[in-house]
Structures are given as structure tokens and as C-alpha cells.
Image 1 (cartoon, rainbow, N blue to C red):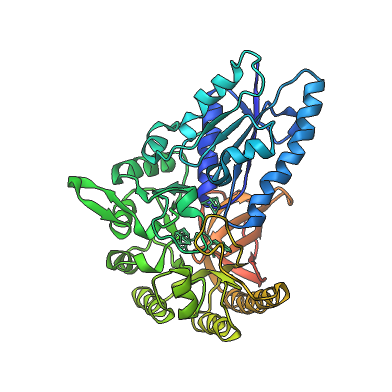
Image 2 (image 1 turned 90 degrees about the vertical axis):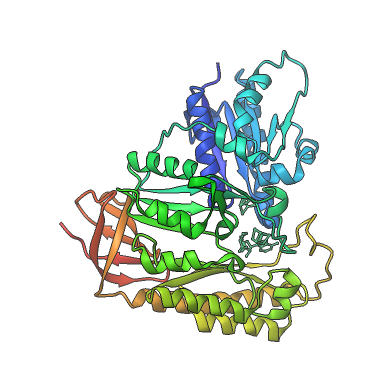
Length: 449
Ligand code: SAH
Ligand code: SF4
Ligand code: F3S
């Protein structure tokens, strides 16, 4: 009888949310979670396809699993290997061809089918090489049929409200790996939010590949945008903080600006990826906004709440990016002074429109530009953090660090990681605490008793 599962997750927050749901499926089936490789009767990898490096992580993980399976087999134990998520969706059968021992491939919108798939694999009657694959895009049934039970309680919880993307930026795999845009209903979201809060959640991070394009059916059969949805959620007692990610500049809207103006629960930190500061490159990427339009949006949000800060994603070395184009990205960073960001060298993805574009730029030059850009980002992040030394910040404490016995970790309203050496258990509390030291990526607070 199979008993334990190990789940490894790569990729974005949406994969983390999905992995929690996948875990719930296994708990409900009577499995226990394990972090020890050789104990895993089921080994499942939730994958990411966004850049080539992310994809390669699947294959190196499968290399490791090959050895584990072999050892377990010698001890008369079988291992079911499952590949889930965005690489599963994008590469499908190819994965079986490359790694024949994989038992199940399940795409990012089909996790509700896992109990059935596992049952089938367990009953395969010694048929050799029976493998199963499920790649349907059926987000409605995914959300309707995934277990509602919750087995792990967190102070800060992800809640996926929107899946997929219709934007087709030329570099990006998401429209292919997650399918067309789909929004959950307001009722479903409110009910999941209330459930989370009942189980100890204080902060909800609303997720979507394109969260600002949310357009779910709400009360009175009317369509609700993200702003309107946030007004509804903010009324829930016990919910202390609301965040959303990832927003696309093109879909920012009046109700959302107003929500930032009116709702204290909506945190003053917005992740708004620009990708490039050059209009030529933005056009080539099919981003559908100019740098000037983007900056206007930033100013509009700032007018609604003065202390609001921003983070972004950047792609460096997109085909056709000249030194001047790159400089325009740096100029935007100087204007916005982002407080944290993600930045990547462009990675050509098979199946996307940019895949066959010629890229004359040398690898060294791409690396050089990335370094310059990251140094710039670091400068503003350090500057921002330094600002808070000897000042107080409201911190929601989410957990205790395993490394030091009494260290609690939490996040400020501006999404800064704050550490504190404290004898008191702070989990789930929002405290106004004094900052002692600042670092590039975190803050340290003076202990309170
Ligand atoms: N929906 C979000 C982004 C989701 S993907 C948006 O439109 O902003 C997360 C980030 O990965 C992107 O913002 C982009 O910076 C990066 N990314 C996506 N495809 C990439 C590629 N082919 N090469 C390098 N970075 C990429
Ligand atoms: Fe990808 Fe563009 Fe959609 Fe973002 S908006 S997920 S970058 S296609
Ligand atoms: Fe990766 Fe899929 Fe997220 S490709 S970034 S895990 S949507």
C-alpha cells in the first residue's frame, strides 16, 4: 500500500498555490507528506517553463529520481513519478519520450483528475509501460473539483482568482502553458477567503498571471473587476491585509486606483512589470503600452496613496535591444526607484512568436547589461530599506525561523522581510516595531518582550 508523497515545486506563486491544492488531494487520499526522497511512494514535480533554466530543473530532478526509483525497486518498493505544471502542459508526450519512467503527466488545469489517474496507474495489472497523460484546459472544473479542505494553516495565504492569459507577449509561454484567461466568481473567491481566515489567515495575496484583467461574475450577475472585488474582500472581518499580483499595466483601472485610495487593508506595494523602458522594444514584445503610459499609471497610483512603492520584472537582451534601448530601461528605474524586482536575460522559448528572432547580442554583453541593471535595482532597494532605520514599521509576523530558536519573520506593509530576535511568539500578529539595521534584502528589528 502506498503511503507517502513528496512534492517539489518550481516556478511562480501560482504553482505554489496549485501545489497546496495538490497536497490536499494527497492528504485526502490518506497519504502523508515527506521530505525524504527514499520514503516517497509518489514523487511529484510541479514544473515551470518560463525560461530554459527553469525547464532544465525538471530534467535534473528526474535524473535524481531515476536513482531513487532504482534503489526503492531493489527493496521491492514502487515509485509513481508524476510531472505536473507548465512543462507538462508545454511538452506533453515529449517528456515520456525523453524520460520513459515517468508514469503520469498532468497539465496545469487538470489537477482535479489526479485521484483518478493515480488509481488507474495503481491498477495497471502489470501492463508494461502504461503511462497516463491529461492536458485538458478546464479551469472551472479545476477550481470546482479540487478539495476544499485545508491541511496547513498560514498567516499569509495565496488565493488564485484568475488563470491564464490572452495577451501573447512575444517572448512568453504562459498563454500556452496556462491557456486562455479565466476568472473565478466573486462568490467562490469570498467563500475561499472566509475559509482561509477562519483557519488563521490574516493576509491574502490574490493571484493571477494577469490579475488586473480579472473579470469574474459577482452579485446580481454583474461582472466585477479586480478593484470591485477588493472592495468586497476588504469588508471581511479578520482579514487584515490584501495584496495582488501580477498586474499588467494595460489592465490597471479606476476602481483599482480608488481601492488604493480608500482601503487601508490594500497594501502600499504594487508589482507592476514593465519589462523594458524602450518603446521600440515594448512594441516588439507586444506589451501594448509605452514607457510614458507606464509612468503615468505609476503617478496615478501614487496620487491615490502617497507612500505606495513598486516592484517590477525586467527582460534584458531582447532581440534588437541596443545600448540606447537598454539605457531607457535604466532611466525608468531611476524615475520609479523600485524597492525590489526580478530581472532576467531573455530566454528564447519554443512555440512563442519571438523564438525565431535573430539576436545579434553577445552573451557577455547580455550578462554585462544584467549586472548593470541589477546594481541599479540594488542601489534603490538598499536606499529604501536604509530609510527605515530607527523608524517604526507595521509588521505581520508569519513564522519562526528554523535556524535560530527565537527568531520571528514577518513582512512590512511594503513587502520588506523583517527579522526579529524575540522570546515571544509573534506568529499571526501585526506589531509596530522599531527597525535597528537594514540590509539589501531585509531589515532587522530591535527585540521586544
Ligand atoms: N504576467 C506577468 C508576467 C508573468 S511571467 C506580466 O505580464 O508582467 C514572469 C516574468 O518572467 C515576466 O514578467 C518576465 O520578466 C519573465 N519572462 C517571461 N518570459 C521570459 C523569457 N522568455 N525570457 C526571460 N524572461 C521571461
Ligand atoms: Fe506572459 Fe505577457 Fe501574459 Fe504576462 S501578459 S503572462 S508576460 S503573455
Ligand atoms: Fe512558470 Fe508556469 Fe508560473 S511557466 S512562471 S510556473 S505560470
